Length: 240
Image (tube, rainbow, N blue to C red; front, side, top):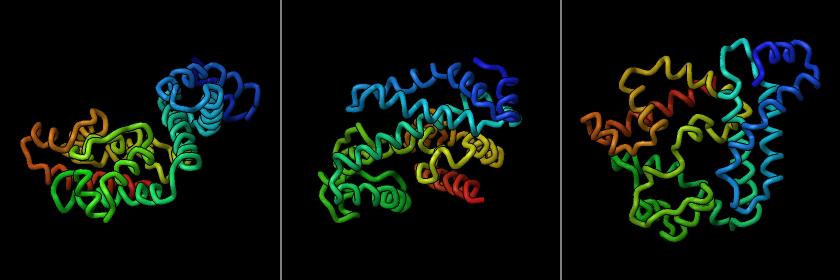
């Protein structure tokens, strides 16, 4: 790995040779991060190229004076570009227009139902809310979130939507548009202790709302409201 001096040198000189040396030193990260996306219909070379270009972008954007480790800064950038590539490819090649439209409506419907029910909705409840069939909801979730399957009876509390890296990215903004960890650091600093605990359990440990409620001895509605407030804090910080 490169030391901070190399990043400081590139930042001041913008020398392409220095940048290339840094990129070569961290290409191992691309190799590691693309592994779980292999054998999903995309060639290794394509994935590697997407990851490598994201790495170059991360080097260009990295500010060594902010005190972050480069690997921590670059990881969400690389993952974000890989996921965006899969999402775009999935939309353009395999997903019918109606399925895409339903998929885009699901997040808001899920949030509305969660507030109303005090828990995350089932696929059946989502389908009724959206006035579509259960099968259409399942197809939309699978297509929109890529490579995850769902039971018609399970809730959406443990789906792939709310893993930490997706939440931190605020995908509609894109990884490249924000300093991810700076935002997280600022929001986390302003959280109350209870919110910090919920944030860690929900987005780092990927616990369901029910599991967190049981762990903290409160109702699931309390966790749902706290989670909604946490999301609001992130959006407000991002929109400053």
